[in-house]
Length: 124
Image (cartoon, rainbow, N blue to C red; front, top):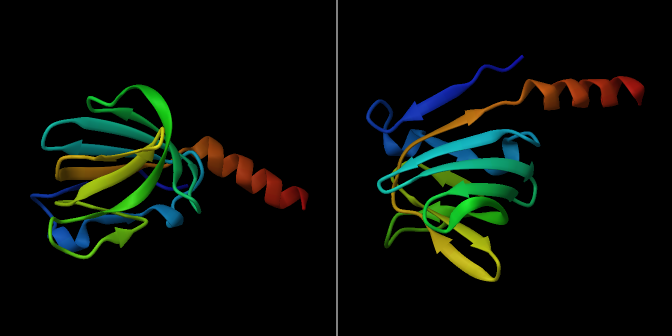
């Protein structure tokens, strides 16, 4: 069983504090603290970046969105990555949203989702 982990910007260099969305499991929760807001992101499809996003001024209620990636202003865009120090790009309702710079991020793994995946694998 996986343990929850949180990466704090103050503890780990920016280059080492990142999450690759595609490597997450369905129903994992990404917890973001930006300079201005907090976000809770439930991953629906890690391969496409489809998620339910709640937080900030634009996602007062959970809404379906695509997690596109992140970047520092003036640097290369990291598709499918969420990186501390960067701004996350989110697409929802035909609009593009950028968060303020990410101060900390963490992933909460859902053990129920892992159990369902184990049962499905055992049945096949």
